[in-house]
Length: 245
Image 1 (cartoon, one colour):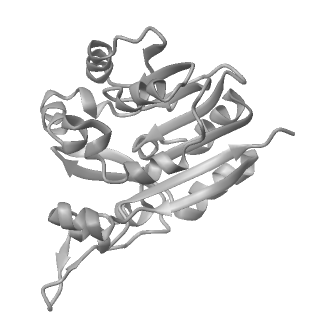
Image 2 (spheres, one colour):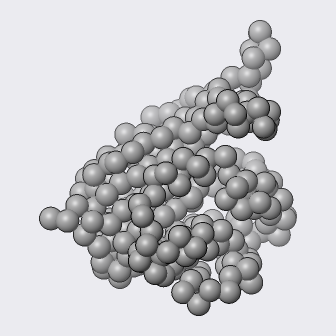
């Protein structure tokens, strides 16, 4: 079973104050790129894996999705999502993505934002997703970039010129990473870029678009604190397609 850090009261309080939780999708600088990677949502059956407070689930219905099922391990997240959602075509379920089972060909789009790096058996989950998609369906997800999460102690280092540098070590050593984020000992699972993308190819997905997110100059102008995100990729954004054959 995955670590349920989001139901830790201290973690949940800190996480709830992030801009992307206070402002929703508008608080996520990568959202314009993700939005462009999504297919036309009209009439689509959508699964939102790691739905959190339900921001994306509600947005997808606003764009014409026929139905959305949001899955999250956190009872606190699901409770908040239910409070903020009045749409009967959106359903929320508590689920562990490491053991999640989905009905075959039940969805036209599977979406996930910043969740898959908590999953230990990524290959199993990708096989489950591929089977759950209808022919011609799409998978769009974001994860922490392997460069961002590879280091044993991920944190900025200031070099002799005063420039921030992000350490990259143990990159080829896949597996658990223990980090401190709001609380101590948050467990994530590092995989190389090759492992991540090849897991998709091996089950039959066609890769459509890969984006190693960096903020635009305009975003940095509006939010100067984003400038350090140009020093290394924090997020990997992926769009993949299930063929109709």
